[in-house]
Image 1 (spheres, chains in turn yellow, purple):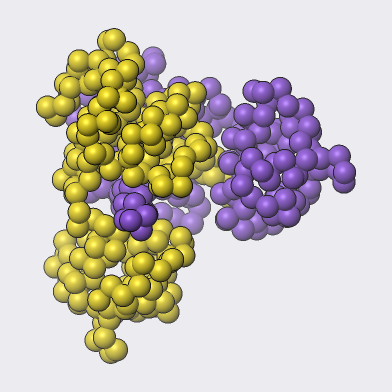
Image 2 (cartoon, rainbow over the protein chains, first blue to last red; image 1 turned 30 degrees about the horizontal axis):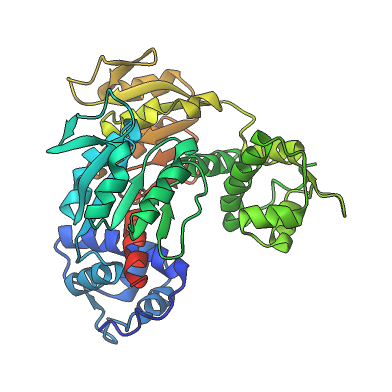
Length: 212
Length: 212
């Protein structure tokens, strides 16, 4: 069914897919088996024609006048996003944010498995979290030389983040999930995805003031 | 200088402003005083014409052939975003994520002041963080009845989040910063800004697989 995933799909379409998935999860939880694109439009807030266009990027799933099978669509969207696979993940930086990420077991449950945690602080190195011991950041290069890691999470302060990204890239991670508030430079072979919390907070501040 | 903030500016322009601000912070740190839109373009990755258009939404700041004064532009962008003001913030949910947010003192430093923290767990209620005692969630309505709160942060699990959002909205917060992985419904008077971490992770997974 997935015909065109190898062609470039617009980033805004890709960014909408997790939202579809979230809504489909809710429908599955409620036991809904089938949904029209009109109903899907009502719960996602996207227009029915946008939904059809979005899904057509990947070959299209609905049947005219019949709608979508919720379970099938859920699985297809997951497959498009790559959620049917497992990913080996390491986490660099085990302060509050790093700990929050490491303890968010949901990621583990859906296939993003934290295999290693690294920090520079002697107080933190050696601590254990869910059976993983926090390792010395100095050993990161050596670790990456013998482990094939899919995703490196950066949860350090912004001043250390680029150096960490360089090590991760050199160590052949496929993607970096960056929580540090800095725009990193990575080689083309590495996918960079940022969570800039302060950008989100600033946007909130802007709209609060617009609201009067 | 800010002429048009009351008019609707496109959300994509607003979302770019924090990035300008991040880059301008870096320039200030380096002691750069003046920058051309061409140079600004190189470091932001936006085109010079997009930058001019973006900033013209707010009255325009540069001078032809002269560029931008970095300090002035930094302050203006901050003012547009509302970062020259202070915000009273409460946090609901004091698990790992809530603790990470509460301990991220940078937010406090730039004017987002956490005044109250709420949780349901008897083990957590009564704990102290930066001089704030974690309060019983049962007291949230009463708290909001006597305190004027700008922003409520939701760091609960997804099943509790809508109920929290309802209480916050009833308690007249101006904005909600939602970390729960659920699409909340809030009254029009309340600004909702989401940090959907799993959406970001799924997007990363997608692009990793596209990269081969």
